Image 1 (cartoon, rainbow, N blue to C red):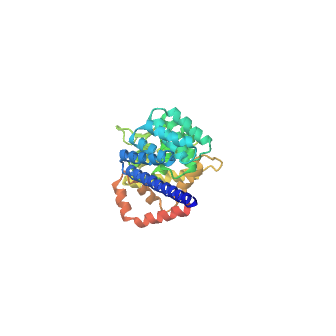
Image 2: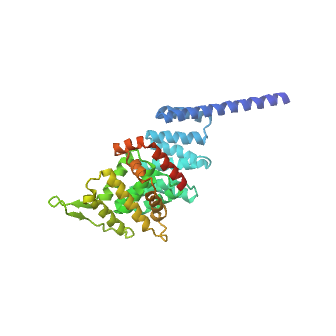
Image 3: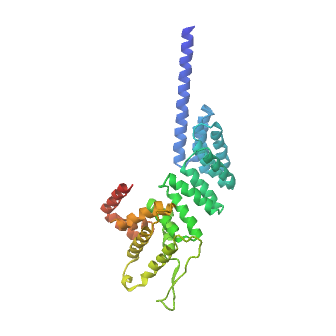
Length: 338
């Protein structure tokens, strides 16, 4: 009788191990299909995994992700809900997938409630704040969007998308300095993507967008002052306009666009650094300005300017290709500054 019991237990353990191996194999197979963009076969593999273990939270989460990537947001919500109801693993991932799915279904307000509930439950993660900020931005609630993006940056300063959307918000508000600072940091983190081309264009537009020349009187320069409500950078905005207008000066007439970009960027960073207000605890004064002021005082500003220009300037790419030693030195300087 005892031998029979031992044999039964051994067989049960063997079958459990075999099933677990099958489950892992099917999930691994599904992930490979998903990573290759083959979402239908990924879903088929996950379905086999669920036949083995219908309660697997990992499989349900991976299934929701593949449905989301395929554009079937209703199914993505369904499988995310299973994970969330288990209250075990992959809660953050399922929340992000469900929230993004609700948003894509046009249920942005529901998505906001979901992210807010997760944050209240102490699921602290920068992507929760980022996605919540994105949702508020889509509803044109710029102040709430900014509040959440600042929290995302605080949790992860290297999340490039948070800086990018923050630049869009302040561009929409008409705040030139804030737009420039956030755009610069985005380009520092992500200099060579399609988004970088847009960000660099916004950076150029904000640096000289309020300066025009009279076509009949080329020596006459018109500066349109920004009348928004943010006064903390009003003097700097005027200085930016003056820097852009200085292109027409005799001393600058032979300078290339790259040389003027370097010169004006240095002036912009140094002006802000010298105006630094230690009593002001906003991100502009505590995070962006100290970094860029130190950069402007270093020997690496030209490298930085070439680096962030590479998406829009082939000459910058050529410069970077033959100045790898300066890139290495810049990287070493950054590591020391951290």
